[in-house]
Structures are given as structure tokens and as C-alpha cells.
Amino acid sequence: MTKIPKTHPRYESLRVREMLVEGVESGITSKAGLIAHGRGEAFDYLIGEQTIGSARLAEKAALSVLFSAENPVISVNGNVVALVPEETVKLAERLDAKIEINLFHRTEERMHRISSRLEEYGGRNILGLKPDSEIPGLDHSRGLCSEEGIYSSDVVLVPLEDGDRAQALSKLGKTVVTVDLNPLSRTARTADITIVDNITRAFSNMLELEPLDDDFDNEKNLSEVLEYLAQRLTKS
Picture 1 (tube, rainbow, N blue to C red):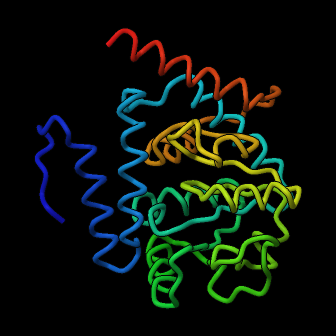
Picture 2 (cartoon, rainbow, N blue to C red):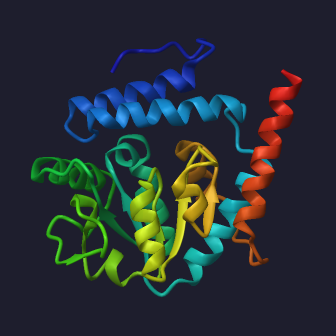
């Protein structure tokens, strides 16, 4: 990984980029994942590269439904594991949740490399390597899942998600929680709780915050994000 001086004004952004590049080189992240990150990073610029109030509220609401779930599952892909492997394992421990790998660009080698990376940080019983069920309506590898995990889950955290799978999970009656920097994406609009925040901040926050049991209105929360963006752009 390229050494980046902490005095660099774009230190955190460049550090995250290097983590993803390392993820590609180590066989964890797909090349398409780099493009997806760049798209999200553009929205992160717009919100000021910070956790805004609506995001913190969504993070607390997410904790509430995940803590109360009977079978919570954290679904991970290559970008998630390249960026927040330790935080993912710690969050799963805090929530008593299962971790399941789910990939669009699926190969057995990538699956095992991702599982091994999670195990380096203490992850155990990682699901997804031997799928034994399918999500109806998905004619690609992201439809493959574990009966013990995603298929039987009642609440599933799907950060950095594809919109079609978020929609398919919602149709199965699951409570869908996502982390998505684009408040206009299909995933953001489909999920029950959308956290508009960088995953590197969101997962760290969810390890520290306490759950909020008040009613959460995802549509209202997303509208507040858009209002924040509009005000920020108007002032710039």
C-alpha cells in the first residue's frame, strides 16, 4: 500500500482508495468495485465527508431493529471487507448477527479470500461459501444465499448494495437496512432504513451509538438528506 502522509489534505480519502486497490490486488475486491466506490465518493464530497444528523439518526434506528431481530444478518461484498473487515466482525459480535458473503462477481477464490480476511479479524462461521438456497427473482450470483443466514433472516444489513437484491429481499418480507451514499439510488429508496454515510464512518458509529426506539420514517429521512445537499450546494 502506498504510504500517504497524514498531513495530506486528502489523507482519509486517499487511504480508503489505497485500501480498495489493495483489495483488488489481494483478490478481495472486483475491479467494478473501484468504479462503485468512486460514485459513492462523489456523494461523500457533497455531504462534506462527515456524518450528518440524518445519517446518525438512521444509524441509531438501524441498531434498534438489528438488536431486536431474531436472526439478524450482515451481508458483505468485496468492498465492505476491503474497507471495514474488523468493524464488520465487531458489529456482528455486538448485534449477535451472522455474517454472509454475497457477490455479483462471484468466484470460489474470491469467496475464500474474503472469508479468510474476516477470519483474520476474528470472524467465525462465515456463511455464503456453500449456498443452499436462492432469493427468488434474481438470475445472477447475488441470488445465491444460505438458508441459515440471509434466506431465513428477518433483518438484513446490506451495505454497498445492488438495488435489485434490496428489492428482492424486501419482497420476501425482510427488514432491509443499507449504507448508501446515494440517497436517490434504488437501494436507498427500497430499504426500510437507509444510512447515507460512508461505511467507514457508519460502522464505526454503530459500534459506539445506542439504539433509538422511536418510529423511523425512511422517506422523511432521505428527504432531509436531499434538503441538506440542496442547502449546501446553494451556499457553495
